[in-house]
Image (cartoon, rainbow, N blue to C red; front, side, top):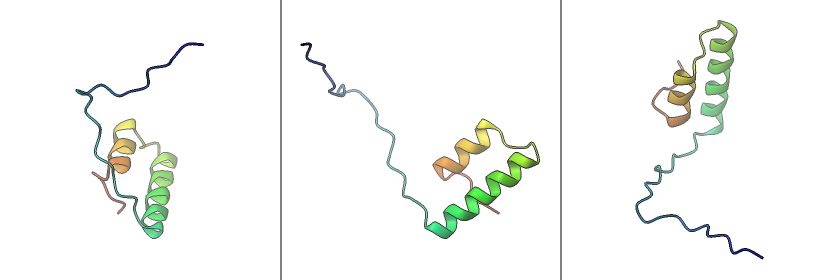
Length: 58
C-alpha cells in the first residue's frame, strides 16, 4: 500500500477563515444572488465577492 503524503507545504498560504454570517444575513445573500441570477447579472466575480464578504446584500 502507498503512503499518501497529505501534509501541507510550509510555504502554502492558507486563506483566512471567513466568519459565517448570521442566518438572517445568509438569507439576504441568497435572495440577492437569486435576484441577480434572474436578472442575468450574476457573474463569477459578484458571486466571489459575496462569498468572501467583500460585497453585502442590499
